[in-house]
Structures are given as structure tokens and as C-alpha cells.
Length: 590
Image 1: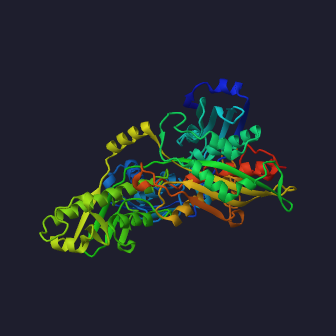
Image 2 (image 1 turned 180 degrees about the vertical axis):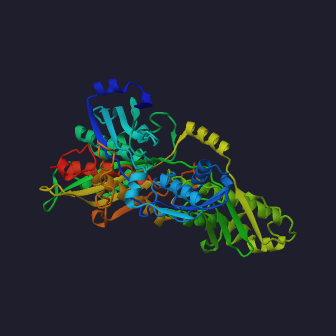
């Protein structure tokens, strides 16, 4: 077993032992498997030493480099095409055995080879989420001020690989306390390597933490919302850094009012709808906000069309749409005149679609490329004696109405290019990795960035069968600027649905004698269906984060965090029973 000391501040064990009020709970979460609608599929074609691969991947750049290394060819000789990906959620963020076998078979036979995994094949060859054992212990004064936080975890990887998950990451940043102890331990087992799965670490870590905070509220006789607000930190609880654009108080205020939290009777089992027990639960959502370098080219044609090129991936999030919106806004042109090219390793190197960072990463590239384009156009204007923009500096002009303008004076792009004798202008934003890493390290010493939110859940529980039905949901999120309300809401709802599945049904059953997955199909691995999900209301504060490109932060993963805890806390309110082991099935309540 490998132990990783994540944080030690003060003496948490001693503070816990002397705390007037405390809870000390052990939680378990099972393994989970990926179930994207599109199974993993590869088409491989060799032409001499040049390889073309059509692949469902979340990172065409990583896939290209990996295949080049594995098959001993230059990266420039590998082309990866992935224009559309039918769902990924982390499962298509790595190169798995099926891809390598297809490429190997194509080389051995000298013919194109297509390999598509069955659903069972996905379970047996593609990693999923690790199971976990977690201890969360909290100590508090009589007024609810936390004096001690302890969060430890044990998770697993495979002997041939896998990823240790940051299970205690949210606990590091969410609550103020003078004494904090965080530790993550990883054990290697003879199982398929685990891999990224929506909010790896934070998804299951927030289940344990937010359930324990709720249980402490019961111990104190304090409203769960009030307990959280009393312990909201002014600075990062462990590192002391500034918390960039944190609006959790506003999210709780808006959500409590909208959800009708004041109508909640604080007594367990006291609320009913006919024969159904009714429970209301709440939990905090948290996921770090990150970005990676992204190269972007922007081409402006004399006919007013704009082409944005970046080797990113589209998995249904609407990334290409949002990128087009950004370019249209930055250049002051209609969205209909913008075309976005993506999903091809021949394009400028883009970020992977993971860690909720693809859009923010590409946004920086679009913003930089647009600024370069404006400077280039002003350079052309200097050679046009009659131009009203001649002599203007970049900060004196704005892009609008299909051109550049300084107040009322300006020129359409078509006029600028025609006068310069140019059919188009193309610029590139190129991000250097070394410089980017250096800047990121400096920022992390000063700032902690994260998307945050609040999950409000209402459940109904049959008192005889203990059947649990989620009947109402409200999520309020602080994700910075919302570029596209429809695609953002879709991403946030999708995460909540996965969180409900985690809470009530999803688990990978493993035969401990052989390590084989026993429920490798959607008939036996139970994901939520329409009948399991109520109308999910999603609200965003839509306040720009000034430390991020265009003020935006990631939305893909924050909404699964805290979701399982909100369900568990609502079940606790309805029944008086605290379930420590996911999923919350009938036998654990009867």
C-alpha cells in the first residue's frame, strides 16, 4: 500500500478527541464502470509507415503521441481523426487495448481494420472508477465552528497501471478549521486498471465529506445550510491562498430561497406526502478549475467569414458551438459566419477534453488569436492613406458590426482586406508548454480556483418497502461566465443525473475469487433512466471570474460532486437512517 500525506495542519487527532461535538464515520463506495452511448471503436489504416486512425478519443494529441511511441514511427506520421465522440466522461481519455490491437492487426494484415467493442468488452478492457473506503471525522464547538477535520481514504489501482484519485481534494478547500489531517492511500490489486471518471476523486470524496457534515448538523441540532455557512473560509484552509471568485454564500442564499428550504421540518421522518416519507437534503459541490495550453488559428476572409481551427474534441458538450460564439463575439461578426474545425490531429494542438478544462483552455487561444488579428489588420490599415483607422492603436478600436471601429469611424473587414490586396488574414495563438507551466505554478502559490455549487434534493421514501424516489432537484452553480446557457445547463444536469445514479443504483460487482466483473451489461449494471429522474432545475450565478480567460470556468464535472451526498442527506432526513455505503439500496434502509 502506498500512502500519500495530502495535508497536515495543527493536530487534528488531539482536537477531535477534545471537541465538544464530533462525528467519526467510515464510508464505502463501490467501483463504477463507464457506459457511454457509443462503445469504444477504432479504424486503423497503414500506408507504408504512415498511420491514420479514426478513433473515439478525448485527446487526439495524446493518442497520436502514444501510437507513435508504441509503433516506432514519428508523431508527424500518425493522423488521428475524431470529429464526433459519443460520450466519454473520462473513459476515452486513455489509449486502451482495443485501439492497439486494431492498429497492430492493420499493420500485420496490410489492410484497414475496424474494431468496435461490445458493451461487455468495454467493461472488461476499459477501466472505470475505483472503489473506496473513507474515514471522515469532524470536531466542532457548540456553535458549530469546526475545530478538526480528518479525511482519509483507501482506493486502488491495477498492477499494470491506473490513477490514484484525489479523494480528499475537496476537503482541502471547502471548510475552515484550525486542525486538518488529510491522507490518501492506494493499494495495487490484480484488477483492470482504473481510470478517469467524471470528477475522479472529488465525486466520491464529496459524498463522504458532505454526508459527515450533514451528520454533524444532526449532532449539533443545527440547520445543515447554516453549519456550512458558519465554516465558509475566507482563504484556503490548508495553503492560505486567496480563493479566486468564490460565491458559495450567494449560491446557498439563492438556492435556499428558490428550493423552499425554510419549509423543511428539521425533525427526521416528520414530513409526508400521503403515505410517502419526504426528505430534503443539501450538499456543496466543488471541482478545481484548470486549463492547459491550446494552439488556435483564426482566419478572416475578405467575404467576412471566419474559420477557427483547433485540435480539440466534441463529445456532445457543444464545445465547437461555444468556440464559434467566442470568436464571433471577439471579432464582432455574426455567429453564422464562423466555422470551427476540430477533431483532427493535423490541426493546431488542442487540449484534451478532461478535467473540465477544454473550453477554458481554448478560450484563451481564441482570445489571443483575435487580439493578434486586430493588430494585424491595423498594420494593414497603416498603408491605406484614406482609412479612418490609420494611426489608431489596438486599445483604441473595437471589433463590431463586421469590422474595426473607433467610435463612429471605422471600416468593415472586407474594405480593409480589399485595400490591402489581401484575400484573407490568418493568425495563430501558440502556447508554449514551459512558459505555461511556470505561470501555472506561480498562480497556484497565490490563488485557488474552483467551480462550486449547491445541490438541493428532495426524496420520497416508501415507509414499507423503503423504495427511494428523487422527486425534486435544484442545483445552483458558480462557474464564472456562462457562454451558452443551454449547453452549460445540459452539462450540469448530466452530472447531476450521474450523481443520482451513483447514489441509488450504480455499482460494479466483482467476483473476488477471479477479479471478473459479474454485471457487465446495462441489464445488470443499473444506470438511471427517465423514470428515475425528476425535472432538474439548474441556476448559474453567471458572474465572470476575472482570473480566467473570458471569465469562464469548467462546468463538466462540478455538478456530479455533492450530488450523491445530497441524496443520502435527504434520505437521512426522511427516514432517520444514515447510509454509509453506496449505493443506497432497499436492504440498507429496511
